[in-house]
Length: 309
Image (cartoon, rainbow, N blue to C red; front, side, top):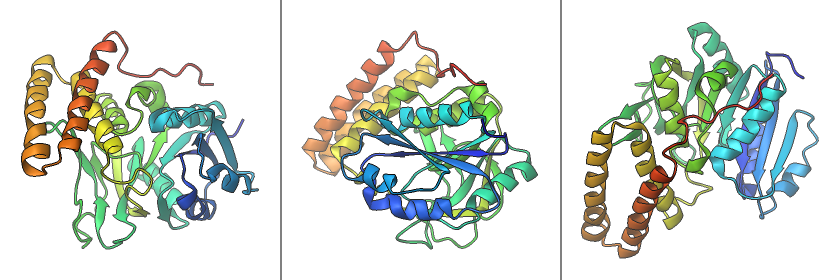
């Protein structure tokens, strides 16, 4: 067992060989904090595990899954390992990121200073470090998703004030252990995409304070591992968007949203983009999201922790 001041860091790898070395360099250079890095590998086939096996730092724990469980369940595996070891806080972080040696300490200290339970940094594009990817976030009730403040805007210090926000991706999120007891874990049904939106909404509804702390910053190699817009990405974003809205919205809003979204798909992919292949993928994913919702109607909205010492 570790002491409660130790931070359990969780990152999920899947064919991450192209980015993992830079990530480890950033993470293992962190100062002023004690941490254990849990790397949860989802059955990579590109040499990721071979690269990780070369790391002799005793703070690194490699957990190898026998199959690709997805980002949501991969995070759950790491979260449970960290909590069972007694870590008082857990950092969920993407491994396609770079950051300076003070990132973890800045988030940790900011969490104490501002009395919050979750803290997140400002995130900039790796290939455009003067451009904002995340400058805080909020729930867009009309679109049924989480949005980023400042996305694509030049960083002119306009988002440099710490403040409470309602939404953040789990690209880099420091979370007190009590949050998982109150809110539960990530919903593994999402696999990838919208699992973070779901988690933030449950935290918000439980009165948990999420702090945007711009004094902590990082660079994100956006979509470097998922490949940008593809049928894979489109499938899970569309499917999970539908599932998320049906799961969390009142029935009358969920039905209204589903009808509007269904009509939106041909307008975007057939009339505007003229991409019938993408439309077919999105249309199939829409109905997959509907089916996913109804097949999980009796399931709790949170994933319970089965064991926390």
